[in-house]
Image 1 (tube, rainbow over the protein chains, first blue to last red):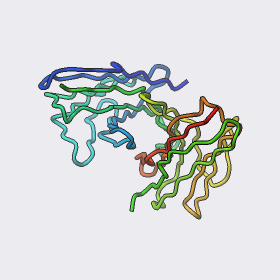
Image 2: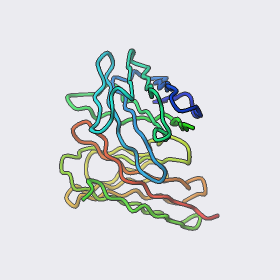
Image 3: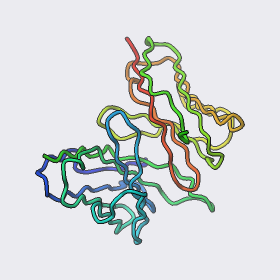
Length: 120
Length: 109
């Protein structure tokens, strides 16, 4: 159980292109989805948190107009990198968390397999 | 000082050995502790998820949490070449997950 599918796995495109990445929870309802960025040999850096039906919360330093996040349903969130430039090249990973039990958000996050984005 | 400290390795051990991976943390707000395994070019896969101090066992994996020392460990018994990966500790408090840098592990056949 707890499968998260991320698509596409690899994108190579020209500078100035907008790229959309999809994240789907296949066998559970994801009330919260997270988007991370990972540089080579470094840990995951949280970019934003999105709850179904509401606006995403972005981490400090992440441009919300650059990285558009939509979480329209309990099983789908999308990240759109707008007008991508070479410095946006990275490994983007989404995760999803199911409905919490009790007053605390204690469900673990389950991750997709990531999208390697290369901007030429 | 980082909130979560993890030795990046690399760590190489022979097949069949017991592997010990560790993280320390400084934030007392962390309540939930996880270990993820990440293969190259893949997303992290949840291995262990614990809340309280003590040990939790799942097959060849044992997670250990010592909240008084702010120290967590993951032990892998009878290590296999397929265990070669990067292991990330992660901790949650106030709804955010904070990761260690990951330890790259290689099991030598």
